[in-house]
Each structure stands twice: as structure tokens, then as C-alpha cells.
Amino acid sequence: MEQTKNTSAPGDITVQEEKKYSYLNLGPTHPATHGIFQNVLKMDGEIIMDATPTIGYIHRAFEKLAERRPFYQITPITDRLNYCSSPINNMGWHMTAEKLFKIELPKRVQYMRIVIMELSRIADHIICNTIIGQDVGATTGFLYLFQYRERIYEIFEEICGARLTTNIGRIGGFERNFSDKAWDKIYKFLEDFPIAFKEFSSLLERNRIFMDRTINCGPISAEMALSYSFSGPNLRAAGVDYDVRAMNPYSSYEEFDFIVPVGTQGDTYDRFMVRQQEMHQSLSIIHQAIEKIKKEPADIFRADVPEFVLPPKEEVYNNMEALIYHFKNIMGETEIPKGEVYHSVEGGNGELGFYLISDGGRTPYRLHFRRPCFIFYQAYPEMIKGTMLSDAIITMSSMNVIAGELDA
Amino acid sequence: MEEVLTEDRIITVLKEKFVDDFVSTELPYGFTTATFKSENIVSIIKFLYDTEQYQYLTTLSGIHYPDLKKIAVMYQLHNLRENKRLRLKIYLAEEKPEVATLTTVFPAANWMERETYDFFGVTFTGHPNLKRILNVEDMIIFPMRKEYPLEDQTREDKNNLMFGR
Image 1 (tube, one colour):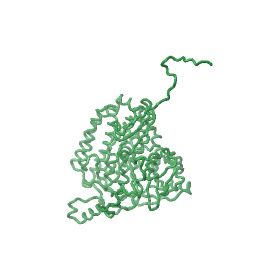
Image 2 (tube, each protein chain N blue to C red):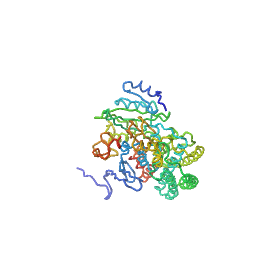
Image 3 (cartoon, rainbow over the protein chains, first blue to last red):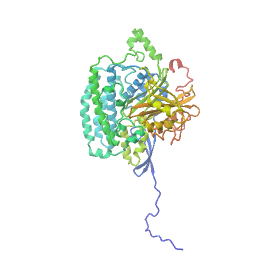
Image 4 (spheres, each protein chain N blue to C red):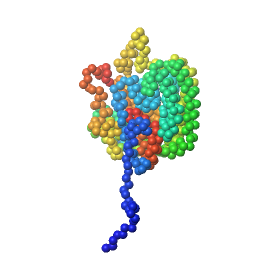
């Protein structure tokens, strides 16, 4: 028998070893994920082969809670969905309820709502875009713009008394008129913000390092984005011009002149740029809304719906009608129509929908939130497969996934 | 806003094409809604996807009707070309709610169906990964069903007249 000759030199690898993947836990509490997300990544060196997201860490059963709360008590729940732009959620819920009750709002109230919604859209986009900068190592822009987010919160504080979880407005309008101080703060913001925003844009928009880092990072095609039901800036970055404000206008958006910016590649840079442009558009919408408000009578801040708004206390003590409405509100004696309503608004990160079924009881029979990031976050493993770990981090921050909304 | 029942063209098409499955149609607050039997719902949605441009799944959710002993599943589709929305509903038996998965048409249905399973216990046959999504995995109930009240029912200090539905 012939003996097999060992020709290889000592130290050479003769046997092809089986390829081994390592597993990496990204999250649940990782500082770069900005919220409680867990992803178990299957890694080949630094390349991601697969990802398994686990969600539900801050699930608070909002849909169940809403089934035992009167309509006006559901607004604070919606604050905690996308807490970066809670006024939009509040307004969305108010409009859903108003649609059910068939309440028509005065024009001035609708424009006031638009001012608030666009301010909070700017606040939302400030967070998302500056965080993208932060995650690629450009902290300066973050510090430039974050003080303007603070200024927006001061405006909210002036209007409703709260900053983050605002509970702003009531069914039928606002709880009180905007004070002169609030208007001053809005004007001052509109004056100062564009200057800082321009500085921020010049830091990042055409920055070679930033562009090299973000272009072609976590791209998604328009077909994929649509099949995963993307909405908001993420869908528009992929090149689909779907904006609820333009397609199904609410709160008189149809009277406003604005552009729906779209991207082409659907990558991190496009998502960033779409948000940048949207902030410009939001500023222009606010200016238009203020011009329109000036033409309306200055003392209207809600529709005439005493059944849904608590009257001022001095009237409750001195006026029988106000006392009746006070009791009707508190004891849930208001007549609620039966019906099935869907209303959606363009939230900070996509189409925020409210699907409401009322059986005539004082609370909804069923309330379902169509939460944009719950729906588009499921495409995340698809988007990061084959990319590096550091790309996965900025892809996630550019998608604007908010844990509160994801888990509801 | 008077509800005028002007039937959408798509309802007429669906009525003709799926005669056996069609149950009813309504227009609550101007939103075209149609109820179908559950057996062929996926082929109905596939038909809408292929020929009628309803290529965007807005949302999907369950509704529990203990009085009817039914669990409804609501699909909301959007035709982005013509900007038309359509809601389809099916009613499943409460004891064994089962329907074919929609993930074959829309990948987005994956988590929406998992959520519906998680909260209502609707089994979507053929789903690639039908596990609980928001609740803990060892939970044995389906919490959004109406038989699980939110508050402790033995409490006497809060009566339903004042605080309930």
C-alpha cells in the first residue's frame, strides 16, 4: 500500500475550517440605539449576516387602556407614542374624534393647529437629523440645533404648560388662546432658527466626509419601501411622493403651498436631505399660516362645542349652563355617535393613523393606532444585511424609529 | 356630511368577481368598506394588488365582538395612484379564528399579523414566524379580547355606572 505523503510544511492549514459566525447583542440598552431596541446580530467579522429584532420592551397596552378612557382622556396616551412630536399625535387624535362627532372647526383654529404641528415636525426632524450627525461623529451640529428644539418646547410650554408630553389642545380646538408671549416666542423662533439651520446645513449637507459616510448606506428601493408599507420621510427618500398632508389634506392643508421633497436612492443621506428640505417647507407653512391667522377674528380658539370642553371654573360656579356642561363632561353624559372612523395625519416619521370604532359608549369600543415605525422597522434586518456594524447604527438613527411608538 | 351611499366602482368589480364570497358593503364616514367571507380573502387582496393598483397595505388589525362570538380582521388598503382607500373585513369564529396569511402579498403584513395574533389570538396559517411580538412569550391569554377587563372586577369602590363604559 502506498503511503500518503505529507507534503505540506508544518504550520500550513490543510483542513478548511468550518466558517463560524459570532453573535452580537445590539441593545436593548445601547447608547447608540437611542431607545430600547434589541437586535441579535449574526456577524461575520464586522459584516452583518442577519439580524433578529426583538421589540416590546416598553409596551404599555395603549389600545387596551383606550377602551376604558373617555375620549378626552385618550389624548395623554397619544403623547407617549412618538414623543418627539407629541402635538401631531394629539391633533391627530382630536381630529379623529371630531370626525366621529362631526364637529367643524373654525378656520383660525385649523391654522393654529398647523402652526403647532409644523413646529413639532421641525422639533422631530431636528432630533433625527442632528442625531445622524452625532452618530457619525459630528457633534457640533447637534449642539447648534438642539437649543432651537428647546425654544420650540418653550413655545409649547407657553401654550399648554407642558414640554415633552404636551396634551395640547382639546376636542374642538384649544383650551385657551395663544398668549402674546407665545406669539412673540413663535416670531422670535422664526427669525432666529433659519440662521442656525443654515449653519447646520453648511456643516453637513455638502460635507465630503459626511457624504462618503452616509451615501449608499442602508438603501431601500421604492418597490421594497412600498411593499413594507413605509411612510413619511423614509418612503419619500426612496422616491415615492406620498405625503398625507398632500394626498388626504386635513386641517386645511389644501390651502397651503408647499413642496413634497423626494429622494432617489432611499439611503441615509437621502433620508437626511428629505428631512432637511421638509424643515424648510415647514417654516414656509408656518409663515403662511400666520398670515392667514391675521385675517381671522382674533378671539376664536375653539369650536362651539361645550359638550366636549370643560368650561372655566368661574363660570361653573356662577352659571347654570356651564355647571350642566361641567357635569356632562365629567360624568360622561355626552351623547357619542356610533360609527367607524379612520383618520390619518402626517406624523414626524410617517402616516399616523387612528382607527376608531365607537358603539355609542363613553369610551371607544376599539381604537387601533397605525404606528408608522412599527410597520417600517420590520424592514430593518433587510436593510442592514451585508453592511458593517457602524452602518447599521446610522441606518437605524436615520429611520427615526421611536421606541414609544414602536411598542405602543 | 350626509352619508350618501354612492357605491365605489371597486365594490361593483369585487361583487361581480367574487360573488360567493361577498357579504355586505357600507360607507361609514365616507370610507369604502366591504365584508367578505374569510376563505378567499388573500386571493381577493391579490386580485386588488395585481389588477386594481391597491398596492399599499395601510394597516391590519383585529376587533373582538363577544356578542356575535366573532373576531373580525380589518385590512386597509390604499391605491396610491388614484388615492383611494378601501377597507376589507372578515369575521372569524371566536373559538378558532383562523385565516390565511397575507405575507405572501405584502411583506409588511408580517408584524401586523404577529400583533393581531398576539392580542386577539388569530392564527394566520402559512405565516413564516407567528410568535408573540409585544407581549412576553409565555403569556397564555390574548389580552385585547373583551373577556379580559382592564381593571380588577372585584373592586367595589368603583362602579360601572360612574367609571365604566
